[in-house]
Amino acid sequence: MSTAPGTDWRPTPAPSIVRRHDPVRGDDLLLRPERVGVLTGSAGVVVELCDGTRTVGDIVGELAGRFPAALVATEVPAFLERLREEGWLR
Amino acid sequence: MSARPWALLAELTHACPLHCGYCSNPLELTSRTSELSTEQWAEVMRQAGELGVVHTHLSGGEPLLRRDLEGIVAAADAAGIYTQLVTSGVGLDRARLDVLAGAGLKSVQLSVQHAEPRASDRIAGRRSFEEKGRAAAVVRDVGLPLGLNVVLHRDNLDALDDIVELGLSWGVERIELANVQFYGWGLLNRAALMPTREQLAGAREAVRRWRERLPAGPELVWVVPDHFDGVAKPCMGGWGSVSLTVTPDGTVLPCPAAAALPDLDPPNVRDHSLGWIWGRSEAFRRYRGTDWMAEPCRSCSRRDEDFGGCRCQAYALTGDATRTDPACRLSPDHGLIRALTEDKGGERPKIRHRVPGRAKGAAGRV
Ligand code: SF4
Image (cartoon, rainbow over all chains, first blue to last red; front, side, top):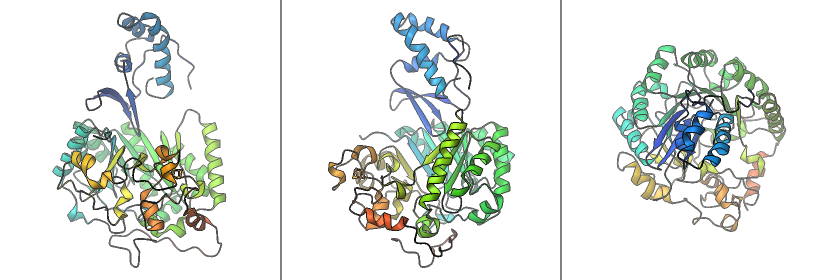
């Protein structure tokens, strides 16, 4: 396993993972074999920015305009790190 | 309307080149001529997507025996459904997989019966191990995620370490170690398949060791042996709660084993929409939630976690599908399970391989 990558990694969905909107439930979803990740609330907005070009720092910067900046700075990196540990992002 | 289903098990055909005696397909296998057409399956996928299904397992029997499989995959993919092929590997060559992946196939789950080629072939009732190894390589070459599924029973539990090593050498991302469940042919062969408590303890310990050794995967999924643990399994995540099964002839069931419930009168996609079947049919409402429960489940704190266990098992063992699953140690019928798991020594019956046509002398209730 790699070490914790901090805020300069460029998150992107891991191979074989599909991100899609679920019109039935109104949430964005991450799909992989045997698993569904439901991105409730603003989680969908965060993951949408994970396209492999933006660093975690970039993502925090973009979201800071839209959500309370202090909250974004602490919660978004932790959230992305958790998704990485669970194998959704890399 | 009740919560929407997440997953669809599509049993595309009961035909299969393998003859595994643990198979959970019903004893009365559907003939090829009664199967749904390509268009009917495409319509099932369209309706499933609309209903909220996001995953489908394309299973059987052996789904590769449907020559129109790519059309069914494409329909599921167009409906936004993540597709997984559940296969024996027999018939999965590069050309076929390229076509399937082109149609939108997202992942493959390969079954294997044992880590040792001859033992695997013996359990499968056919030479197939080598072909499985080639299929695994093809899936890896194409770049789809590959899972291994092994049904565990008396004849392979002792090989657990070798099975994990096989998975590692085949490059799988996930190994499902599914302790045998007793439905269909598996129920018919229960006495022959039943493991011993010692075997299970050894296998459990092996899984623990491997998880420690392989923190980065492959993921090891241990499907609990409910006959031995004294706890009821949360069957299908609750009746009519997260998943539905469509059988080869279009019958829709809350669980693949529910075909064995004699008075269920399950609906069929030829007569009704999936939405109506899920939300309104009597078959899907019958054991949904907790209102149908009798004691001890009714007043039990675990009733929302395990939903009283498996209705099909309650029926198979007691003749009454509304009773608490005898696998639960709180069930008044738990003695039935204990009697089944006792190792009485002596000679074991031979496994009867799965064959088309009803097994002679096989009773619906055992
Ligand atoms: S009594 Fe029923 S609800 Fe309680 S643990 Fe047993 S099966 Fe589950």
